[in-house]
Image (cartoon, rainbow, N blue to C red; front, top):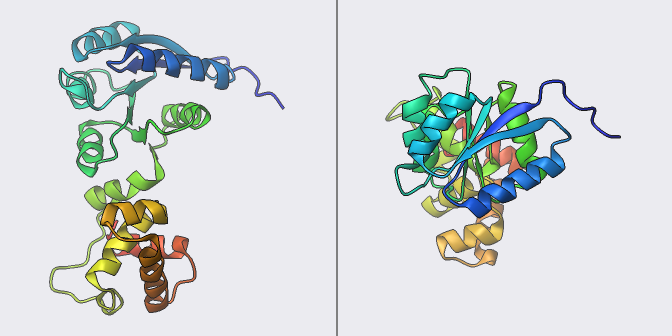
Length: 224
């Protein structure tokens, strides 16, 4: 069933220093957004973005994090407070915790990586425009870790957590952030079989039955 056209499509502005990438994003959104989205402008530098955002007043800015002249954080610092009606969604190749936390602290409403599909990106744009916060699955843990009020007071022991070895904790953190076994193995320079062994041990020690229960358990203890 075709989605009916929106009377007020989300007005999107693209900020990225690669013209070919901007062209690809525009084409993807035009093909997949079902008239929910209209790309109203673009910029390839921080200075151009600041001027054009002021003049175009988009609903959502898709924002590259790393650009030669300062990147997404610089754009946010110069525009976010001045235009509170504009929502910023970071779109980056980086999945580094420091990048995610920096742009969220600067005012971005979400952060997705450039591995996202066109359909998922269109949905993310519509969601942030409606007030949701949107993150690629493995990045949500960084934000929880930086902004959550939940914490274990210093010096207080967690008997269940104390059962896990340091390596098991490392595997659990990556698992809870959405990494596949192959990716965990590459990150920790161990074999996939070793990852499977560690996960089995963590499941047994925590008495959980699957990775989703483990993710919630890890989040409760601020491991992700």
